[in-house]
Amino acid sequence: MGQYERLVLMAEDELTQYSSDARKIEKLRRKIGISVNRAEQQAVKAALEAELPTGGIAKIVETQRQTVALPFWGIAGLGLLFGISLNQPLDFIAAIGGTAAAIAIQRWGWKLYAKRIVLDTLIDIDTKISEIKPKP
Image 1 (cartoon, rainbow, N blue to C red):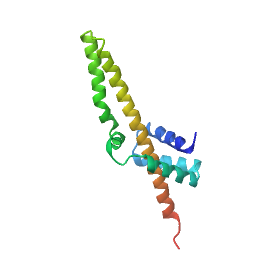
Image 2 (image 1 turned 60 degrees about the vertical axis):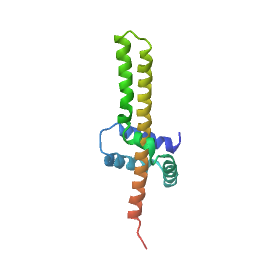
Image 3 (image 1 turned 180 degrees about the vertical axis):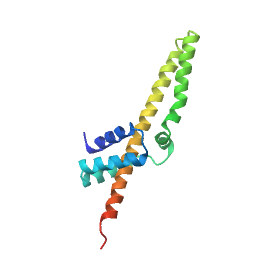
Image 4 (image 1 turned 120 degrees about the vertical axis):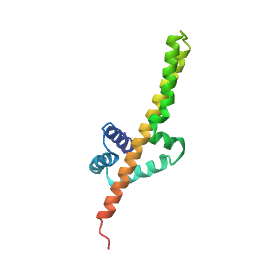
């Protein structure tokens, strides 16, 4: 597992805890500073800047993953409701498809958000280092 994947997994671990983005960045900054050297930080930062979306549907999914997935959860619920109440086995396909789509959207948004937190942390590290370095 490369540094890129390891940093994203560390960020996903931080996302499981309820705290502000600033607190998540603060915790990640300490972990990244200890475990990743400066050259690898710059390489991961460049890869994340190239990969992360700046607009479009991916940006919306990153910031509002639950809102985007909500209609699919509704489709899944209606498929289940109609499948049970009307004895329509084909409606269960809508329940399965809606559930799969909703989970996929939320998982995609979770990954994008974790990558954004890593990028914000690396930018924060760069800012802190530039503030500390004496200027001639």
